[in-house]
Length: 303
Image 1: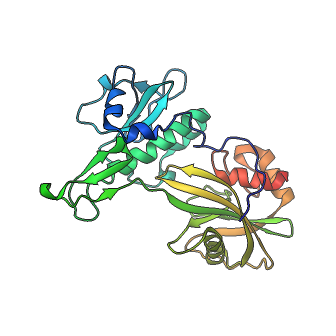
Image 2: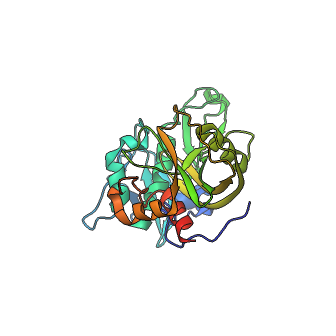
Image 3: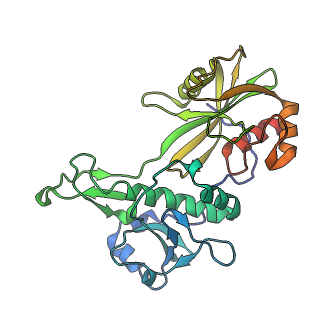
């Protein structure tokens, strides 16, 4: 599965300027040495970031944090350690139910969005994994927050190790005779269409996941699956794997439990929707720029 040339425009949540500094994560003494007055702590309101007077992420110091709060080591920036606090409660609803999150995605600078996205994924995972999935004992944050360990057996645990997870999701274009297949989910605003998407299931390749999801959602047999680009998506923690594919039979059989609608769009219709901006045209609203679907469709139009 080979990639194809993709625009250099930044994809939301990618390109963090923080050095992850794995060598410090795994060294408790080195990590402790960076927990000083120079360290920076990302200010969060639950899972949402605080914004400073310049419109960027707000940062505090270790002195601003309750000593009982768990801290995740994000890495180094300008030789200063960066941390994020673990909230009491993890995500309680889907991303589309968070209007403030959508607003921030359009407001934050690219590098701030990348920092926030990585931090959100990590602290949300910690908030939702306070107990061992194997024995139910309380877990402890280790390796700067890039691991949680169950308590040792002599303390009533099972000593299992747990690691932050990222779920792979395919998101794909389907092409037939210079048209693209796009769909809309029930949660979408009226006239909003996007690329089909779905989770990669255990025991299948990316190519198999793309073909299966297209068949299940739209009743179309796809071939020639090619990887194009990816996007980290922190709601809660996914890797969007952008692909293209081709079909020889455009007849649709829509799974109405997954989609409200799916249809073929001509190049002219998509170009017109892109030019129309956020409100779209009578046919459709083009996906917003923070979504990889926007970049995939734009890439197809601009080839």
